[in-house]
Image (tube, rainbow, N blue to C red; front, side, top):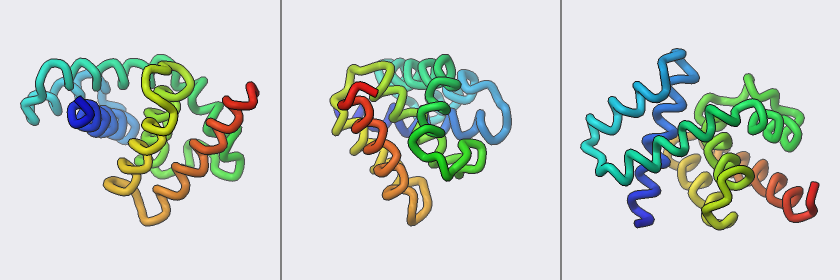
Length: 138
């Protein structure tokens, strides 16, 4: 099961990245990626839930990024970092089906795999600040 969810997060990140860079429809991108990679239906379905959740809550998610990384305007973040944060914040603050530490760990792993050298530390810092605020009820 964890392997399926990790793969789904990778495909969701790829679809969100493509959509963010090119303005392609994220669902069409997701369907293409799922077909190209012959994803099992459960993996494709979870990736779709992630993409749909991020897109439906993008303004709220971006405001959380801005509040917890005020020196980094959301649109000036790297496209990879921005979309990794969006995925993780959706899972942490909105979806709430994944334990907090697991969602942060997954985001850091995505940052290591797809981001720059500084991405893992940045992603971990922003998500740590958000989780601390959540724990404090703010």
